[in-house]
Image (cartoon, rainbow, N blue to C red; front, side, top):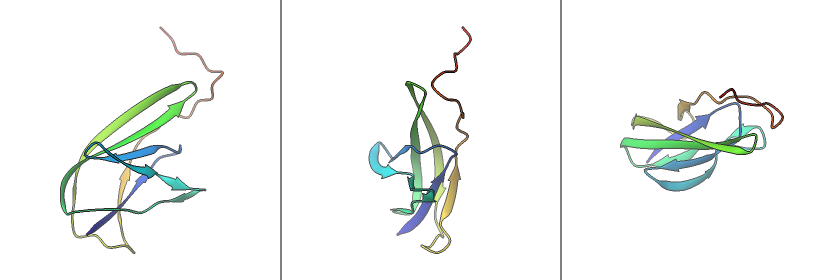
Length: 87
């Protein structure tokens, strides 16, 4: 088995190859996920104000362990619900 975390400033829902795995954080601590070695589509869905945004990365996950998991970093917008988007 391989191990990875999903890093982002926000809390979000993690999916691997379209299958929901759980939240990326427990409190402020990143959760460690497991998968088989290989190429995977890792998605993070987070709420920005009232809208959800889903981001996906295709990642080769191999050569990891539970102590040193692969860190998959996502860049999440940090805005509160009172901000307005330009149109």
